[in-house]
Image (cartoon, rainbow, N blue to C red; front, side):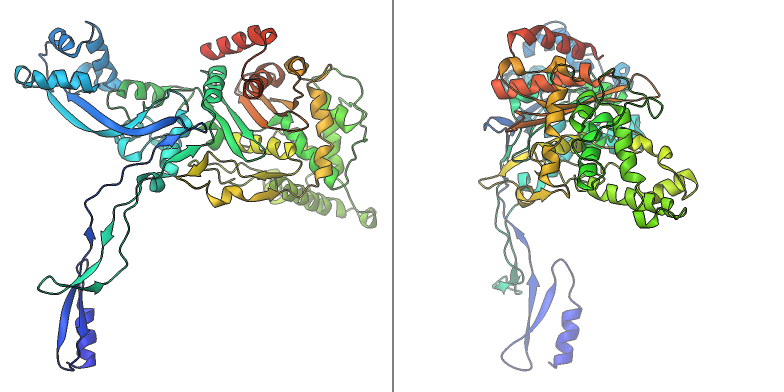
Length: 602
């Protein structure tokens, strides 16, 4: 056979069993081989998910499903006795297994059974020929908290996807949150082994056409989550709309991640929880929306920390800069003494003070161009772009890269944005001053808010926040061990801390939330976010202990009112719980009030 004929024979091979013409030792003969892919029979076991104390949170367990006949009659009393359930339990379980629009239609229904219940059904199968019992394997949750973190397997959530498409249509994408299960699916799943032999017509192997794939069990994931702290934080937010994110600033490990209203794990994939899923989908507060990752809101006065740090770095102010509380510039809701320093401005959260901080930054015109009337607009464009560059180094206006699906980037406005929005490039500071108090066009996610205050705690650097501290026997993903630095010097972050500590002291905006009685110095900043469509939103960021931070917390409660009275209590209770393990007696009544409000959703 000629060399040309050999190439033509090779080109004629087909996939997946592709035949290859291979020349033999003699010139005029050849052998035809077939590419085969032989998948090995062993199935990998899906990895478990454990918390930071190595308690198993999610694992694959046997599942027993009882399928009821499509149509009545069904002796529910006798079936309830067979299963060992009370007279009303069976009907309640059937109702829970049906979505709203099918509740009146009756069956088919699948009910989850325990192993003992399944054994009783098997023993009496001849007496109940209309029942179908199946056994499989499904992910089982050992905890009821952390639903927005743990997520679910996509393969087990098909019933939820179908419901969500019907109920929410365009919002379906927003409501999908596979959490850790989805983000790390490949590592959790492992993969089956496969061989790739070249086989002749007699079935004899002649080498490999590709490297064999080794069998790999699914990897266990050890979370950064502190489960008792997570459960406690969920009690503090409960049915309210909002979020709480707590980070260890030294490592970037997320200790608590709460998206509220909270709901129990397992609802999304449980075969007999269709009614509960429908209730979540219909709920006007959208509990399935993963707020800390996906919802970007104006941060309010907590953003004064970023503006102050950037202004210090660029020389627009110094720690000793004093500004008058000029109410003609912008209203100030706090009655306070003169803000004769940056620390005082933060302590009292003086809006006119930070209005003037930002004005110094944006309106600055170099002396060499001071007499040029056309220079001011160009200077504002350049100054805003510079401010944005420094603010973005905090991880803002971009996806942080947290290990959870569908993280939103937030937003910081550009000069071009204002040119278009204002209809002219000659806009003035007065038309963008809302930036000075974290309002207007600025949007941050909860993860960004928590990371922002972790940066202040670290005096200028951060590790990307993450939820998995080790994969199998290794560590976290490599990108979570890389230290990131902002463009602001550490000395300028240190200048913020005295004012943040003063916020929690007598006369500060959050003096009632102090932990001084238990020897913990908290550094914090309150925020009240104006809302034209209802009550204002409450925000708070802070870290503790102030001199050696071990926890940084961001809290945002939609329609919560003042940050000092709604968000700050939640944050400091979480700090105290984490650092001390318990709440001091003098705050027990306060704790009970917060939890009571969380239960009622206000």
